Structure formats: structure tokens, C-alpha cells
Length: 232
Image (cartoon, rainbow, N blue to C red; front, side, top):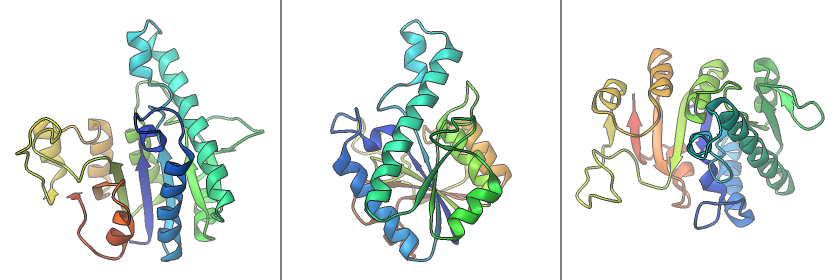
């Protein structure tokens, strides 16, 4: 694994309720990313915006889907800018890239520029989703992974991996150590949306689902330990 994509939900930056942007939580994520970079890996991050606004919830509140999704994209950029500030304050070079222009604040996504930045020890934070409505940030993570030649997509969650049912509801839910893309799709397991799984399957990008709130999990994985669930 030379190049890693870390997919974070917006709630991963939030407080205990998953809302807002909690500095201590973001610093903890920064520390884990620094460890990956220090190990010699190239790192990109895709961040969600659910701690601030979700397009789907906006639709339920009466916004049309296109407007709601655009608001969700802007929420991811707020998270990315906050993350960049904390990364930089803690000695980790970072750059926010978006699929549409916000010239005074962030960079327009460019594969060559992103790869050059990562090769020089910087972390590229991809925000704004795919730039189009009707696509989730999971799909954005898969798309950017394909574009950047990512060796492993890490889907960071609050559970230990992929289960055959919801472990928060079913205490006897079975944790998979490995599972194939086609079984995720066939069984309708709620890991990532179908578009994201399909992109990874078509481009042979393995996905590792793990609990980011267990400190050291990402570094253990990078160092060769079998953490969470591997989708391949």
C-alpha cells in the first residue's frame, strides 16, 4: 500500500451527538493521519458533511433535492477547511480541493497537482463531493480513489467493520473479516452506496472498513495488522 484514501463521515468530526465540528476529535484524526504520512504513505481524505447538513434530510424538510445536495456539498467544504486548519496547526501540510471553483479559499481538483502534493508529504482533502447532485460522498471517495490510483480505500466508521446485520440492534450480528463486492451488493449491506461499491469493483480498489474511534486502528492496519473488514 503506497497510496491511501481515508473516507470520513462528517459525524466523525462532530461532538458526541455527531453534530458540529469538535476540535479535540479533529485533532485525534489529525494525529492518526500524521502517523500514516510518517510511515511513508501518501494520503488523501474525502470528508462528508452530515454533521452540518445532509441533502437527503433537506429534501424531507422541503428543499428540492438538487438544492439540498448542493447545501450538503458546501457543508463538506466547511468541514474540510476546519480540518485543514487543524492539520496545518499540528504540522501536517494539507490542501483542500473541490470539483467546482471557490478560488480565494480552495484549489480546483486536479489529479496531477494532487499527486505531486501527496508525493511531497502533503495530505489532499477532497471536499464538495463529486460536484453533482444525487451522488454521495462515498461515491466521491470511490471516484477520487480511481482517479488518484489509490491502493486502499479506508472507510472510517463508528463500528468495527461490516456485519451481516446492524450490530447496534442485533447483539449477535456477525462481523466479516473479508467479503466480496458482489456480496455487498447482493445482500444489500449498508456499507457504502451501490455506485461507490461498483466503482471500486470495476477498478479493483480494495476497501477496508474499520472503527476510527479506536485509537491506533489505522496505523495498525498500515503496519500490516488485519483490522476491520476487507472488501475485495
